[in-house]
Image 1 (cartoon, one colour):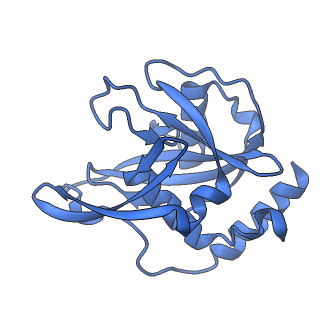
Image 2 (spheres, helix red, strand yellow; image 1 turned 30 degrees about the vertical axis):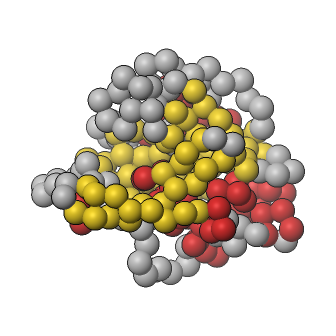
Length: 201
């Protein structure tokens, strides 16, 4: 993973050198009170055309049933975001944390349901054996990283949420609808990365 890891690390560090205005957040819709810390893994696969792993949440889940998500969840007591993201990825997909090369934490995202999510970018070998936990994952897929980061593949839509009109982002890849929090995290990351150079530069 040497060449891609070095390139992605360089692009990540260059893109996180300062503050960016108007990053996506749902903080305006969040309930008052203390936010619940959570973390997700943006797991990039090491290929000539790098991919990124997504999961489908089970249809019987209480929140966000059936939606596309990154593996992740709430921080346990004493955990940091990186530890939690790797633990949740292992619990949901059976991927050993030792196989993930962590590149860094990107912009936090506050959800309308009161979670303060820290996305963690990491690189892993391609074609790892994946064993989804049916209690948390109904399926998984891998989409090209450059496809999901490319603004040309994003559509802005609007919907009513708690009586207020709000914008959200939607990305569709081979029938998989990526939207809401997951798409917003991707949108923020794409502003941080010179993603066109992941392969070419």
